[in-house]
Length: 139
Image 1 (cartoon, rainbow, N blue to C red):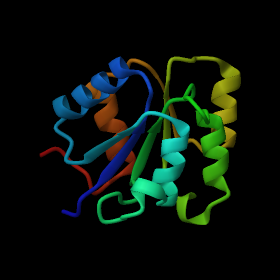
Image 2: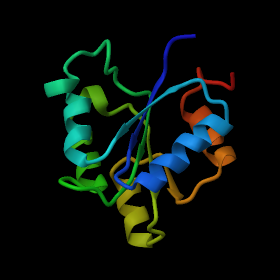
Image 3: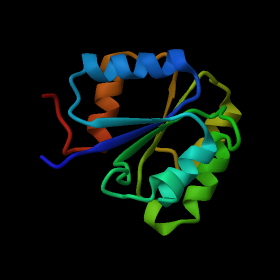
Image 4: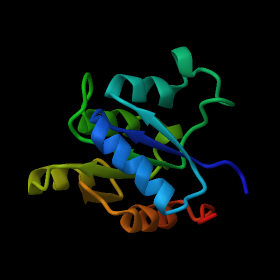
């Protein structure tokens, strides 16, 4: 099976730990790459700066995205991605503490495929990943 990269854009260390734990418990065969702010995510997705080597930093098959991030928030990042055809097919799943209807509606209008309120169980994470990345599976 080809290597599959899942990108987690999250600035809260506890939430990163929980997601890494969920990936382990769900036995997902994917590389989870963690970025902690919107600027890093833009650099990674555009392949610039320290992320310029696509062999080491491949485009992700799926993005888990927090909404409240330093520099560029999740909404701004999705709007930026929407204007770049190479990124437009990457599914984005919002992983946030906000259960506000306005956030949910804005995310859907910006192309988010799903909206999860933290914390999410390993089973939910596994099901979401398998839904959007059919090549991935439990080891």
